Image (cartoon, rainbow over all chains, first blue to last red; front, side):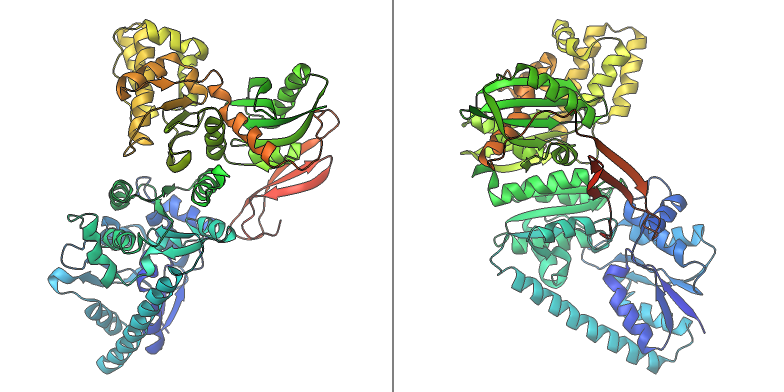
Length: 300
Length: 311
């Protein structure tokens, strides 16, 4: 029986739940690569070009890990969501890069709403490629998408509730594949939790609400995920104490979004750029002083 | 007996120590190079401080700051261990309660702190890149064959500073070599370097920040008159450089130590204390954490670097 490999990086943090539910409903075997560890990251750095961003290197590390453990690897191309909602070039290029570097079978679909290529069509294509019938795929798709929509609603509600808590609240702005990755953003999150901070994640808001709000900060931005992030800042700015912007080195869209947010939002603001330097010391200095500033400890 | 408090700031390039009394007056101070060995530097530092400490003084609190603050904090059993941004702000506010902007350039870090009514409103610190900091200046001084302490005097002599790429140290260095080979005089190149440090700082940590006077410039690089001159020129603001501007972090942490005194009396005698660190890589899981174990008198006091918390 065929096994599909899902790299736990980039797309996984947006579509992982849908894929897993879809494959489960279709009774297709799948494996997800493990939580990032040093070995996976090193594999990625070895296989990738030095100019690629840390997150893409990490992604390639996960693909490298999976390459001999499954029959197919799922690599979509997410291009745009219409209405000037582009994704970053890595999301366009991941499929071609993987195809060129690795000698493996790839399950592939496009999301390009400008050309009418939707997630639904994509998942149908994948189902067909794995020899499933249309009614089966239809059922599985429905199951996955309903569950996903419920999850989005739930996440949004959790964030809403967090905004009402009477603790120091920090909005973490960043791409989920950086923020939740064990080697990229996890240490920052752990440090904040240890210091009794209420963390609100920008990506957990419903992007239908946050995306249009990005207009308050910039009208010309055209990166979908940056718009979501800036929208989350606009949405929460009156209810939070500070903002931490986490990005990986050298992220193009983030460098723009970060500048915009830093200049237009008058809130305590910290920008952390993560590369593969393994020591936490530098980050700790910045986080500690940021929390000192928020807590007013300097002045007691 | 008079109570006094020790503040130690262990930076990447230099190690600073001050002892202050209850009125925040400096009793004795010291400034030496770290030379890549923080524990040794602190031993030397304490020897110097001890020599100048009056007999009737007793140390009632110790604070550490700077990039080696945790390590030295364990070694000295410090009562306060704090990051250098907080320490610098507190030190400066003690002497200049009206300050609005603090510019700081150290060996490896550069930061800007904005203050309003004695409250920090925002700050920024250099991110991954250490371009345009003290370590760059000292390595370039070596390349040009002069002491980094004389850098400022050379720069002031120049009337026509050369243009040097301010974005990246690697580019700056190739620019600099090129200019030297073409035949520009030394002082013009040095002045160009000082100017590029200022431009780099303002484009990097200073970008998007509104710099309002009074402006105070501190950290080791503030002792460089050339850099001060170009800050004044470019910002069009008067720049205050305190006589102890390079010690502000140490003063700040000493002030904090005074606030957090425990009643314990500390000794500056370090000869009998054996302080060791052992580094190794753990291979129990694919993370391969780099671990550091710290021993004080052969007793394990702490270990760092573990992701899983096993050590």
